Length: 395
Ligand code: SF4
Image (cartoon, rainbow, N blue to C red):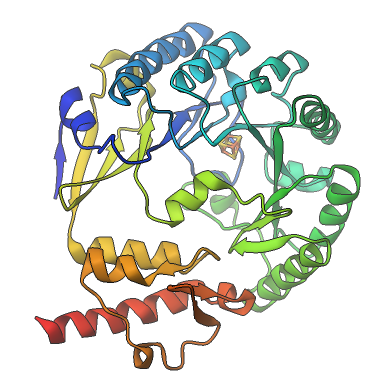
C-alpha cells in the first residue's frame, strides 16, 4: 500500500549508508516535447523556475551527501528530461556536490545534441565520467517523425562536439538510437553512419513503442508488425556484434567491457536514491524493500518542503522477487541464484530450469545467451511462475 511520507528524515532514514549507493537526478525540463515521449518532463519553463528547481535540488542533495559519511556514491546519473536545459553553472554546482565525497565510479550526464555546447567541456574535467547523447537517428525524416527538437545539422554538430569532448577529457561516450520506425527507415544505415563517423564504447538501441497519451499514440502511424520488428532488431544486433559490441542487455551494447555501470546496478537490484520530481528510489534495509516515487510536479517540487511529495510503498516479498527476476534475466550479469536463496528463500534446482531455452547457469547466475535476450520477458514470467509454485509448495 502506498503511504505518503512528507518528512525528510523518513526518506533518508530508509537507506543503508554502509552499503554502496547509487544516485539518480531527474531534470524535468525539455526544450520541446518529442512526439513519442512518455517520460515526465515539461517544456516552456522560465529561467527563474529552473533556478528554483536547482536550489531545491541542491538543498536535498546536500542533506543526502551529509548522510554518506564521507563515502562517494557508487554510480551517479543525471537524466531527464534534458539536463542540457540547465545552464553550465548549475550543472557544475550539482555535479560538484555529487562528487564532494569523491568521484563516483561512473557519473553520466544525458544530453541532447542541440543542448551540448563547447563551454560544457569543463564538466568532464574531474566531474562527469560519461556522456550519453540522445541521437535517435541520422535521417532527417526520422527526426521530424519523432518530433525531435534537434535538426539533422544540430545532431551532427552535437556528435562532433561529443567526440571532441571524449578525445580531450577521456570521458566515455554512449549514443542512443531508435529503430522500428517504419519501412521508410533503415536502422542499419543509422548504425553504419554512426559507428563509422562517431566511434564510442556504448550504444543503446530502442524499438519505438507507442505510449499512451503521447502525440504519436494519437496519430497511430503504421509501424512494423511484430515479426518485422523482431527481424529488424536481429539485423541491428548482428551488425553491432560484427562491429565488436557485446550485446549485454536487451537494448544495450558495449565495447571493450564498458557496460553502463549505473544501469547494471538497477538490473542487479541494488539500492539507489532518486532526486527531482518524478524520480523513483529503491531502498533495502532491515529486510524491507521500499519504493519511493516523487510526485510528477515541478510546481510542488519547488514550492513544497524538502523531500515532500514522496510516496512510499513497501514491496511484498512476491513483488520484490518478481522485480529481481525480471531485472536479472534481461542482461548478461544474470540472475544471482545465491541471492535468490539468501534473500528470497528460493532454491533453484536443475529440474526447475528444464526447457528454459536461451539460459544457462554460469558462476552461480542464470545468464541469457543472445537468443535468451530475445525472449527475456517470456523467460522471466516462466521462472517467476515456477518459483511461485515452489514457494507455495514450501508454505
Ligand atoms: S528530449 Fe528526451 S525526455 Fe525530452 S521529450 Fe524528448 S525524449 Fe522526452
